[in-house]
Image: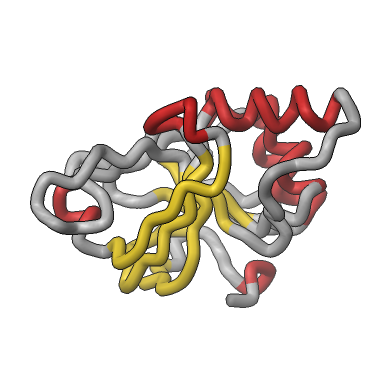
Length: 163
């Protein structure tokens, strides 16, 4: 995927890997970086999905999985983009800081449908905890997805669908 060629309102059916992480995992990564410790995951060329998958009850890799509010992760966006993250996925409007970070690093912000978490779970074909298992649903996880629906909400030029 050529991130810089994407424009706001572009719709994508993404197949590949996603890194799932939320507030607690971001905070813990920052603490490790501040202490000059080695990070437990390589985020280079990855896409972060802000979500907390529920446990599966029927043999699927995950239970319901939907995006969480993204602007809570805005204070960590400079950190994850500096680690090579290509984009983030969540729901809702981002701050002006997030728009500036997308423009600075030539990265994107995607939104994905919320309110249909049970259907989204069927797009996940593999799940693996990568780090911070003690955080439960907020652990850093790797998902492999097929035909995962994404909409470009902020493009690499800082254009936003929320303006």
